[in-house]
Image (cartoon, rainbow, N blue to C red; front, side, top):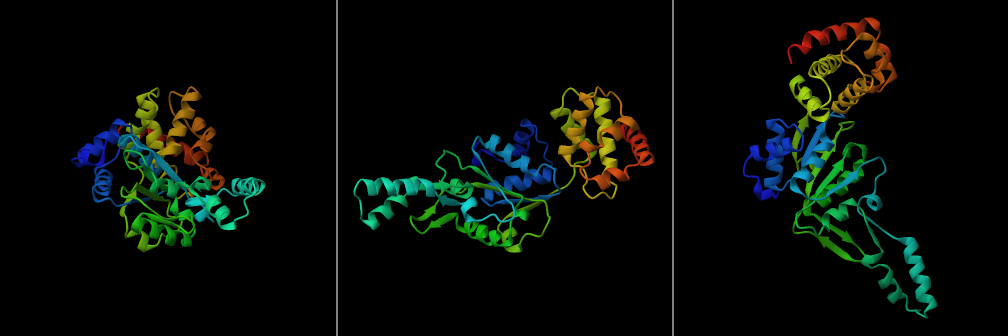
Length: 304
């Protein structure tokens, strides 16, 4: 698929659906507009709700390469854009000196050429030579420092990179940019203004049931509904970290591996570690609480 092949929101929603990604109308509209307006899309939401997966599926739909920049504290230009291959440069210097080259300017021009450059994700996305622009995933931007945000803003403004030794690298076919954030801190407004914004929340019970059935076709309909109803009830609790879709799928898989056909307090207690990731949250799930949630799950499952 190419960008201009999408004539309407339904087109992109249907293609996402074919790749087993269930997107609601609002998200599909945001993606459609992002492609048509050639603007980055900024996806914010709790961990595990499918933000990263959107970029992966979009790359499949567009039949193009996915280039991922995983953000973290201390991320800098060398790891995000480019760095020089110092070991190879030193080897080249020694080889040229051994061959009798003593012109420092000639040596400098040689070792600071493109073949000694290590292209990192942002450079790869700008310098991409494929038939269709790549999908550039800037994942968990909120983990990076604010200084990196300022640098990223400059790149997204002009889609060009300046390298002192080489010059300016610019693209006439900008990448499809997907930025995600878990909102561990606020991302600067200036960067958000460059993007279309969309918040991805936890799925409804019916959406989550459909996700489970598609991702885990071996699960019975009754158990899938019980799993969804239980998880939906857990999300109403005041836990430090609520389970996302990824945890729901892990838990459903674990139950199948254990041969579970029906949810019970005992099996729920024994497998809480696949659903909750903090000990304080697990400890708050005492026998009475777990029993109550299981009973609620049986009742709510009939409504899905």
